[in-house]
Length: 146
Image 1 (cartoon, rainbow, N blue to C red):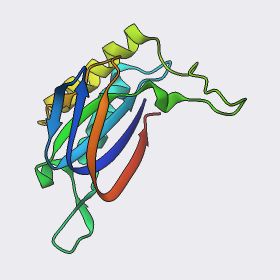
Image 2 (tube, rainbow, N blue to C red; image 1 turned 135 degrees about the horizontal axis):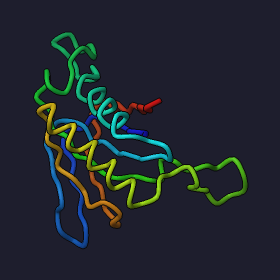
Image 3 (cartoon, rainbow, N blue to C red; image 1 turned 180 degrees about the vertical axis):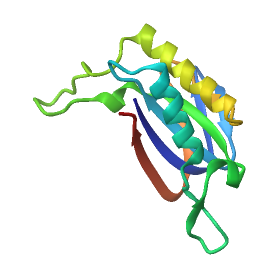
């Protein structure tokens, strides 16, 4: 499982011209589910997202977590995080999980965030989405479950 985090001042995701999810300061989490991922990995990765210290303290050092900063989460499914570009010019997505199983694990991740006190606003799994954000920093971090 891969989560690409972007610290933002604000963000929103639109589907078919309607806002599906919107947040103020916090994290946009682009989540990719890979073959072989498990509910345990989803829960562990959610905990890492919540506890990761990427928000500034009073000295502008990244010492505060999502909870410390009172931030929100915008969660967006992103199977393209599993793109393999080692051959040719067209990415292969063989390492990405099948959609039905990926949806289950995406839901497990979202539920784990909620259980940790950070219920996410969300895009629409599998839909074509327009994501707008104001990146703060910029701070972008890639997390992977093992």
